[in-house]
Length: 107
Image 1 (cartoon, rainbow, N blue to C red):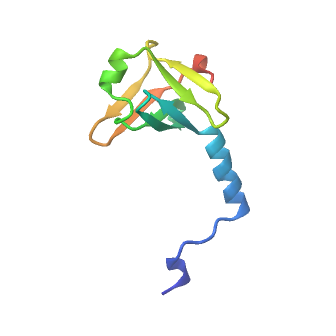
Image 2 (image 1 turned 60 degrees about the vertical axis):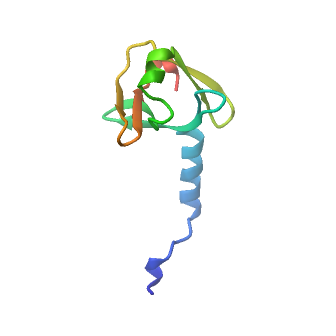
C-alpha cells in the first residue's frame, strides 16, 4: 500500500482552523428536552444561514414555534425569531434545512 492510502496527521495550522470553526461556526439547537441537534453557520451567495437537519427542524416546527433557541460554544444563549420573514430552504429527502440569518439575529 502507498502511504497516500492512509490518513495523514493534522498539522498545527489545520488544528487552529478546526478550533476557529468549532468556536464560530457550530451551535447546539435545543428544540425540546428530548430533541437537541447541531447547527452550522454558513454563507451561501453572500447570505448567512443556519444549516441543520430536517429531523431537528421541520415544517411542523416552523409553523408552531415562534423562536429557535441556540447555544454557542461558550454556552451563550441566542434566540432566532422565526416569525420574521426569512428565506428558508428545506428538503426532507436530503434531511436538510437552511434558515436565513438576519442582522438583528446578531450572529
